[in-house]
Length: 152
Length: 142
Image (cartoon, rainbow over all chains, first blue to last red; front, side, top):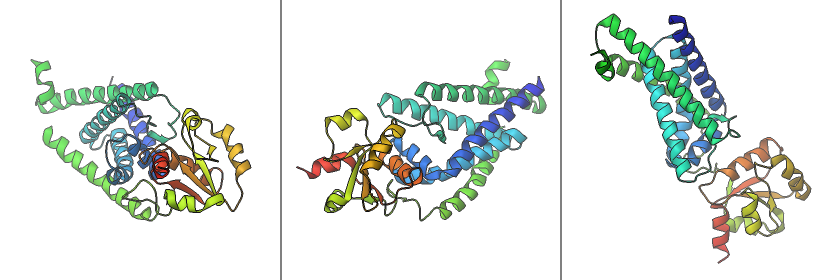
């Protein structure tokens, strides 16, 4: 089973590397995508458009090469949850948005397909987190707080 | 695990900051940090109106909104029907024209995207984004 988790980590990592790289090539377009959500002012959208893609790439690399793995997983889960929240908020407020998850390459995708992709990525990262926590527990003999209840 | 998570997260957050700052410095003259409209790209209603016949207004809103009301003489060009509508705009265009792209309001991003595509995809110059969009133009007529 170990190869399966490793493959999943590499696959999810590659998706984030691709997603980040596309946005790195067009930071101004990505700033516009963030701005379209109307959640933060432009003075925040613009710096974020330079920072978030690199964060995705580094976390994707960390996942694929199993370095800084715990940190990468936690950041990616936080990013996906934030993005799902922002997408749903925009939807409920009736804002017509382009997703921005793959930069302008994804602007013709539907809201449903964006959400489905995000949920799949969330599921993948959460599975990886759970598996990593189990291994961490068995190696260190420590029960991580979020999973303490399961081991009773 | 919490300590490891915190340490690793901080390292990754810091690592990402380095190239991001470098790239932001590289792009400093091409992006406005205070407004979505880049320096030199935006034009106010009064300035665009002062161009008179040299201004070619481009309505980047959905067709329904265009049909309800639009700037007199404006040409419809939105991303949904880009390939279909672009020839219509090019027929009205001439090298001395200044294109003024607008969408519904200051916060909409469609005009910026259409302006960008007019420059990069269609290779046109003198493309401007109307500051405040259709709302600003309508308010200026009162």
